[in-house]
Length: 463
Image (cartoon, rainbow, N blue to C red; front, side, top):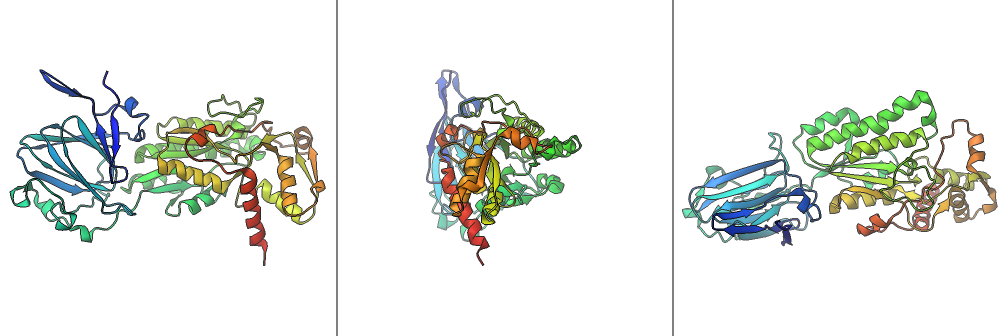
């Protein structure tokens, strides 16, 4: 059985030489250019080709390029040999970097979007073929650079005067006139919420997505690195009211379905946020990503339905989190305000978890998208020892120099009896963070993040 391909990085970020399993015999040769299972553990596990193209070059010296199409591609030759050239046209430090190499059957190159690609056939009847993960669009941009621009110093084996070049490529602009190609944007839905506002801070070039404009993204010809869904119905207790159920499903399931369809249309990644409320809280140990959900509340049920939609996509990040605080109304801010006023607070002390600063969650989201981490479900909260809601309230009061004795501990049952529309909560909301740490991102300790957040509230309140 052919072995998995080998990947060798180059001076251009994201440009990889790919060693194929090439098996010649008396009849000719066999090689496997693309096989999704064998790429699953590679740096390019996210690559999903949608189309294959080939070009036949009848004479040596046929020169094509340099073109930077708005898609990623895997290039190789199946007959003859070609001298291949790549020039990075993406904005950033690598703009203008170049790499060239002769390509023969048995090897390939993965060319990332925004890197100009060109080649010159070195033998008659050279056949060049490539897989791409996007479709041609009349609205898309196709930047090009003159392949014989002297500034690029490309050592073409066959000089321009002897090369076969199309008139269009001869007229391509010089490198000096090239404008750096912007990096693909992310689209953030729910950008005004706790997580969404921090996403806009962490990814300032992101584009705000509105549900009424979903259809416009499919036809704009642009490439997007991810769709991030930070929109949700989060009024946990209100969700228990049967009259609100249609609105809950509209936000937590139907919208996810619409964004999943958009992700398929744009051939991009969907990022969706899940909740500890999909679990029943009965388990004593921290909840793993692969534990079986069993929500206790209507809110938890709605979130689980959205999870199923997101997980139906191959390219997805489902980030499960808990006890989020950030901009706007949340438990921590409420305790902050009550502490400032010197008020007493009755707080549940028999539910355990870890609080999550929306800013940390946004940075982890950016990390997954930027590093193209393996797709799937990830738990994310603050790290450190699990605590109860009562413990957090005490921390807030003490941080502000207030008497922690003002915070009384009550049971979940007591709190529920005083709130007729109370939604049942899991007693254990502690999420296992090992997979997240193994990805290369270590969640900050929750006391450190909470201290920073409280300090920011104090600063904003100072005249």
